[in-house]
Length: 205
Image 1 (cartoon, rainbow, N blue to C red):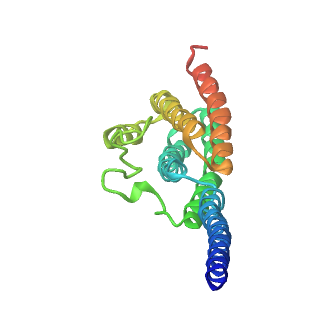
Image 2: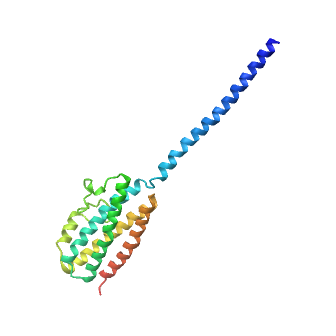
Image 3: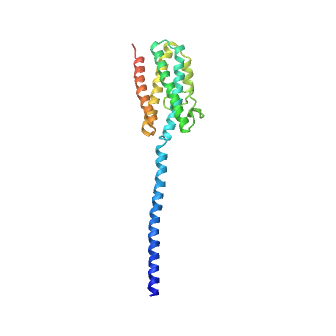
């Protein structure tokens, strides 16, 4: 009889241990599931940007700054009302975009712009980004006046805009930030229209 009781007791203890083990396993797996899925969701969705978004903002700031440098030459060198008007419109559109992208970089904890890196100065370009003018080209443009300046400026600005459009298309393909992708689309729309306008202005009247 004592052996039966002992056997029953051992079986009962084994059953309790088994049940406890199952329950512990379920609880632990539940905790692991919760902790393993939450962080990636937060990391992937909270900021809503990736490395391409940062690169786009940094590079486009430098690209826009060179366009502003080119636009700043127009009032004292151009004899064309159309070129003068376009230069003003380019400056009016791109300056606020520079401020917007600078704010994004600050929010993202990134460097203000890649133009601060060696060889990326917006005044020289060095062919570091699509459509950027070299230091020699900028010097040559700055030395021209009148009709010569207008034609040279239009040729260079068309190339510059084409480069910006190329960069914006890359952003749309690879970027993650909805705001940055929207700006990229705005740049494509506006600068494609200005490219067409400038090509028309270059045609003999």
